[in-house]
Image (cartoon, rainbow, N blue to C red; front, side):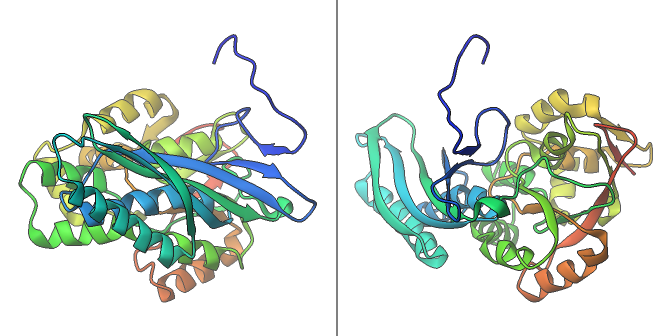
Length: 319
């Protein structure tokens, strides 16, 4: 932000000087704290599942940095005059169950009365200072692996419009509520150089962050990208959220689409995701082994979707 000076010190290993998934502060030579916060308005009707999804989404930034989340604090905005308190209890229970699954302890929180319901977490995790994964550490030749399919933003738009089937509602709800914990544990055993999670900026937006101001670019194979089939159907019906158009407007200057790439697929690559998968940059010699183990551990849609190149710099070529 122009004209602002932010306090910092030598122990801030990842801070506001570079956009990343979370902040990292060194406590000792062997321990660093990862800190992140995220909350949003409901994206599903079921309060319990909303709590699960919001918690999984907030925890994801710690996993993307290669860390282990340990504590969390609730962030709640609730319209007390317009909603029954039982709805809030269900949301909180959903969050608690997801934290329990992650091995995270709730240590506090803060709530305010607001006209619009919101829920999320402030999360603290641990990592060794030498093992931090950031967005900007890709290497030439790295293969890029995506662990969850794209299209949740478009499907959620269809859900809001009452056009989605019960089956896809159930699948997308469970997909968004799935922790990136197992994927993070698996990738810790491989030569991973960079990682981020795919959320509001969409796949191409987050990829752009990884190569911006670096000597690298990305070649993306559109047919290899896991996509929810229903997302293509709904995109064809015009059910593309406004966020996807904003993402395209902001980042399309860095993206070159081969003419054969369908416009609907292009929309999905810009589609804002909620609690999306990890995007992992790994040594090319181990990429297929990593995908195999990810699939064995439950990330059934994991796939190699592209590679890091030296030309053209700071650009994403989608073929």
